Amino acid sequence: MEPETEKIIENLRKTRIASKVSLLNLANTIGISHSHLYYIESKRVIPSIDVIIKLAKALKIHPTVLFE
Image (cartoon, rainbow, N blue to C red; front, side, top):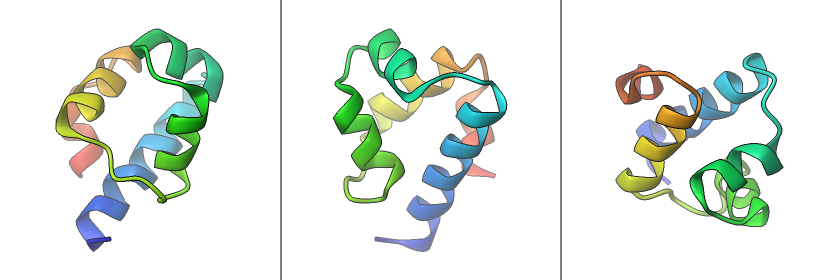
């Protein structure tokens, strides 16, 4: 996995936790299984751009925040 991708996933996880949103709730909000989101956060699966955008919208942040 590329370092840039790892950073996006780390930012996603940190933002989700800071927002006090559960893994299950976030997954349900964007229409994926909680196990799929778990695999993304544990860096076993690389999320598509579409999923990254949906996750950012669900967390009420601009997707570019995850790329910083």
